[in-house]
Each structure stands twice: as C-alpha cells, then as structure tokens.
Image (tube, rainbow, N blue to C red; front, side, top):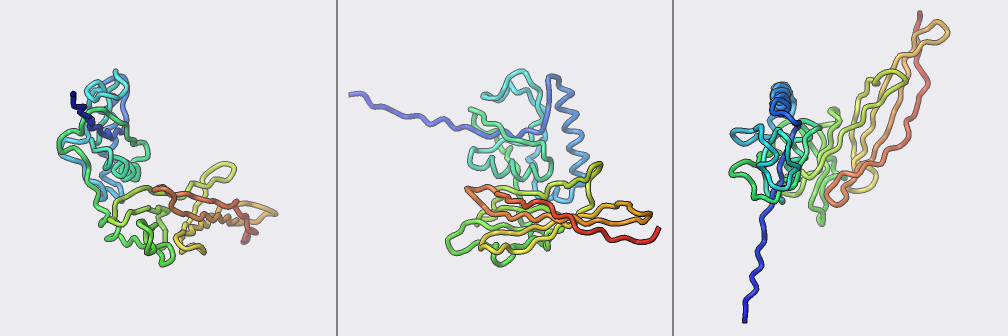
Length: 240
C-alpha cells in the first residue's frame, strides 16, 4: 500500500511600487518614494524592513511577469500581505501586491504601527465602534478633517481604508473641508464634505457652497461607500 503525501506550497505577497523595462525605472520610483516619505504625514505608520525599497528583477520572484525591473517594498506571507499593502497605499496610492509562488523573502515584510494613528488622535465615533459580535471598527482622525477613514480589525490590523474623493467644478478642484460623525445606522460612519468655490454674477464676487455626504460601512473586510449627489447651495455674495 502506498501512502499519499500532500505538499502545501507556501506562497507570498510581493509589495511593489513601480518599475519598468529598465533598471533605472525601478530606481527612479524608489528615489521619488523616499522623497515623498520624508514629508508624508503618516510615514511613521509603516516601517519597511532593512534594505527596502529594493530594485529587483521580476524574474527573481516566481509567479510575477518576467522581464521587468521593479521597486519592491517588501515580501509577506499570504495572510499578512493584504493588510501591509493597504497600509502602503495610504502612503503611496500606486503601490500594490502581487502573488508569488515562492516563499516570502527573509525578514522582508513591513511592520505597521496602528498605534501611530491613535497617537495622532484617530477615534471611532460611538455608534461606529465595533459591537459585541463585530471584529472591526471604522476610525477616522479626530473629526475626520484629514478625510481618511480606516477599517481596523479587533487586533488593530489595518484591513482597508477610504479617502474622500476630490470634488471639482468645471475647471479646477474645489476647496473642501471634510467632517465625520457616527452614521444613523450602527456601525456606519457619515463623512460630509463642505466645499466652496468663487463665482461672479451681477458685478459681485460670490462664494458658492457644495456639500456631499458619504456613508461608510464595512463589508467582508472592505470599506463600502454610498455617496449621495452633490448639493449646490445658494451663493453668498459681497461687493465688487
């Protein structure tokens, strides 16, 4: 009688910033990333492992599209990868994760310090906090004034995040001030953007206000947003 032995192959999640067909494409992205991190408000949230970001050939990581030179921010287990990728997207929206059939690189997974959010005053409005049977909470910075909402697991692991969209008039972005309160339904968060732009009419300079309300909830480890139509308010006018 023969014994059947099942072998489970350990895969990994490779965290990638950018790159291209040439080595300098990866290095250019790394140089830009390091400059952005020097000024990033949330840079302390994620600590890359020693030696990262690192320019690598995609051929070195089985399962990735070959022939590319990529900026690698880390290498994590399949369990750790999605949360680390979400944290990195908070710092640079262009980062992403790709599955590799190889085991994770040694000591290469970034660490995420969600305590940095708490130190910055992030909070969960009472009705948006996790209930007895919930294992997550939606949190935002103080009154939501930075426009970022996080979905944290019960052990403060970052699952996902949402940022207020940029609103525009016909020609340019509007100047907006977001605010956050607990939603009417338990476990939801309501984020309102109050935006203004200058208009001119009848020889007077006017300021028009536009508001937009978004209700957020958690669904299968993701932040789901339901956004109402923009509401244009009557402009407030001064003299010439």
